Length: 484
Image 1 (cartoon, one colour):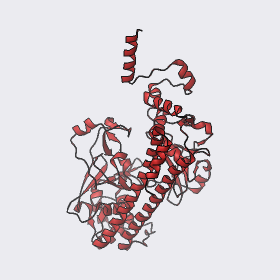
Image 2: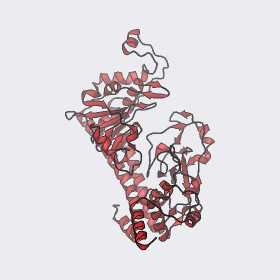
Image 3: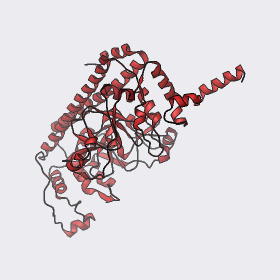
Image 4: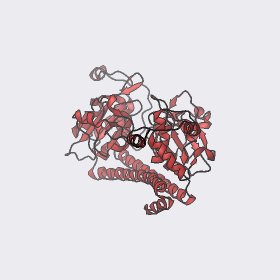
């Protein structure tokens, strides 16, 4: 090949997603015997080269403990059991505690290897979110499912590891090593071969302090939200309420015929008592002050599962959890397809409710515009409504809202369903303006603290990236600029 041809060849390599590797390089560096294009993309290879030049070392050189938890036949019990930590409880940088399931103490006792300790690094092992990583900073005991890894190291700061694994430089390496199409996985031996840069103990301690502050703020947010819920129940005289223990209830035939239901769940005495109390106190149906619709049947072939790729965010059933829901945390639709469907977008302040479930039908408060998928109820408070979105959300996620929705549930193939009319008819209490406003303020301050807690973790990740790109001194400067 002459010099001109060689120059053109090099330019083509730079402009195309083409990687040229020597056979000797594959044999020396690729211990995984992978020659597929996904494993040898330009960007992760360039990142690894950059880290190595900066003196990074393989994670496995420090002999970390990487635990692959045992699996059991899952038999869930009520909330007095042990929290069974699943992959859906793990998100990048955060632990999701709203969607908990529990196993019995006896089942938990045989899963000692799976037991999570405060400060553990947890990584999703399988599924679309394989590679997600967070610090287990929960105040509640838990045992992990086999779809996660538990990582412990005496040689590395755990908060620093989590910040790095979530950074551009860690995430690119983890995504590079995933294998499998329908159900991507990450292997323990691959985690051991990830390149990680070393920084001083002072820098790592600073990252750790950001994680600790975030945890304190999240704990305070939980306290404020619980206080708001207690205020709601007290205002309704339900603060000391216990569900009736009677297992048998009698109903007139006319009631059965009018409702076209004769199952015990629909005539649950606890739900009936709550509904009667709400009606006595002048509660109103949700659709009296809000427009309640359902989402659009989007073509699943147009879904973009990778959250890094740009697109139009949309809410799916699995996204509906108590609290705020930000567009940046959602899966995406191909933009050209979504815009071509000419469907309306939900807006900040709207509420979405998952209509498929079994033990709950949680509501989320949107913080920005996005589309809504089918089987998701979309609640748009009318401008004339005197009830805040935060107050309505609290009511829907509290015992008074959930008992009404669970009462209406029908079950098919082990999955519970509710109808749009069930959502529209949920009774929302009308309280005095002062109590309503105080509850609203508590909920808003709780969400503000949660946002600050998430921001601190995002800052930790960004500061690690700064330290890698500009040097540790620049990272320490950024740490000093974070408000105490």
